[in-house]
Length: 319
Image 1: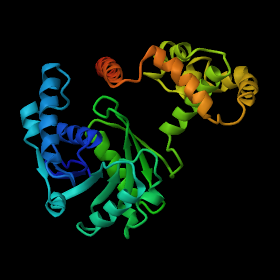
Image 2 (image 1 turned 180 degrees about the vertical axis):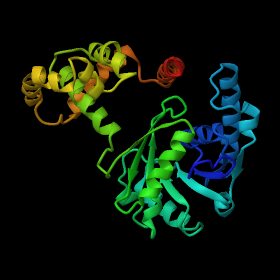
Image 3 (image 1 turned 90 degrees about the horizontal axis):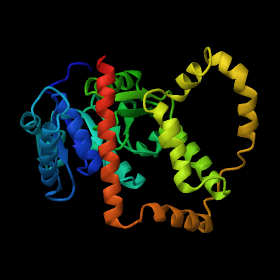
């Protein structure tokens, strides 16, 4: 699976994730055919990608060794599915998160390509067993779940179907490494995959602390952004505990009982009742109004900060 530069990848769906995957793949020299069922949508996506690549080049954040113009030349927009899939060795599906739609798409895709073509889904929470239900040859199916925005946040969760061939997992892993992402291999499918399971655990306890009047919305977010997040931007929870003592084993000897005591006080999963949602939303909107212009400005700020962090991480990794 290595050294496929110059070969073709098909991206199905030209929304935000489809455009992001396209940018990642072309940055490594792959040709990408981007398809969308809506007439003209793929063409508009190529125009948007071209604009973004030029902006990234001007900011010095363009990925890969090719210029923005050279990368743009590797993309073609398609309105015929058969032509899109012709010559592709890897297909990345990026349509909206609807199980029935995804099942139908993969059933259709399989009828156009050989058994050696890898079928990959960008789903963030649907199990491979369900997504690939209508595929006959499930051994070449895999979930490649990116984190938004994939161009700056490099993690990709690779989740196998129970029948996925080991070579497909390894080939997809190699591809993701080659295009500059940071893939993790789940050994089996599990509801929520890894990222969302960890993220939901954090959200659940943050919710409880606000609901129970322990912390305000602003302060619970500060616990992460000015506390845990400062470490977690560069190291994970396992390395954190390893470094917070003379190794992981000593950490558990020191703090294991305390951890069990605190964890036992967490209680059941929050109900996220309508009453609590309205109350916490009101507090949140006092900080950031849920109007389009305010949310858009905050998202732009988030992405600008992520870009800066990505620059710092790139610098750190080069040392």
